Length: 381
Image 1 (cartoon, helix red, strand yellow):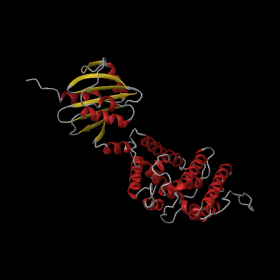
Image 2 (tube, one colour; image 1 turned 90 degrees about the horizontal axis):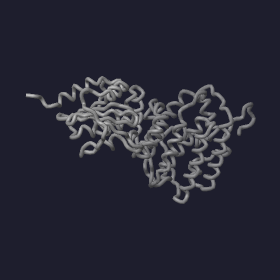
Image 3 (cartoon, one colour; image 1 turned 45 degrees about the vertical axis):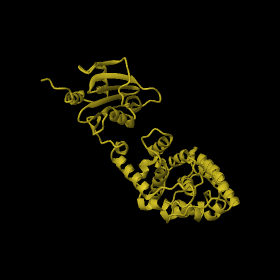
Image 4 (cartoon, helix red, strand yellow; image 1 turned 180 degrees about the horizontal axis):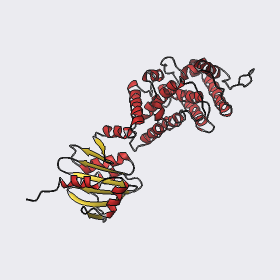
């Protein structure tokens, strides 16, 4: 901790060059111990306000040392460190401890949370996790702490670095993941996205490049400029359109979907409209009304909680189902062989009160759906 000032501020006990830290096992252990101590100190110490960017940056450099501060506020892209294979598990353990420090309350200062996030990027580029995926929930937790909290005052210039760092972290988490998928990687990426994507919308791609690496180490995990551009574009779109992420999911699934009068509608050349409507309902993820049709037939699905109601123009009846804990509309209704059996069903017309109530709750005009279904019914001659 600094001395000789009225309000001494915490700082690293040793200002080590990170290249030396990574190269020496003894120095790396000292560095980790010093940083953990600093994380604990900044949890208990209020950060002094700075008059401007230069003063704030100087304070960060005093706290972290020039080498580590240069990683957090980089002037140029970094080179991935080389970590001997017999030390990788040590770094994984050290980062896990630091992750615990930044996510627990009270949180350390913003630049310390950024420091831990940058160390994850550094060591992912170094291939420290090899083929393992344990880094994903850890990085998710760290990136979720990066948005500034109420009462945290930093210079405006920091936002471009902070938002760019967030964009790179999200780009990594979105690799081999689908924001609207159901797998473990998908859920982790979506959780991080929900907490930090609003900040990524302010990122500058050129600034974000300073947090990127060349994948020149075995097992390297790195984000590319294309990955980052995608994150920033989607984050910006999401700020303007609350359904932007969902539209991106539809596009990724090869579905052309429009929101028309509260109904997610898709017209396509797919052979089975029911499967398409079920896929859309699954991607939406909650209560919804979906409809899909081709030149020959149409299907509509209503989802309300665990209740799913479906009607096909080829056999126009309302059929009622209950989703089990692990089921989705797609797993329930996506079978090409036909609809699963159910004892609960009603004639398509007149629309039963049960269905009318579901349409009303979804703010859907049922007449539009009825008119479309009528267009597929055989004409009497």
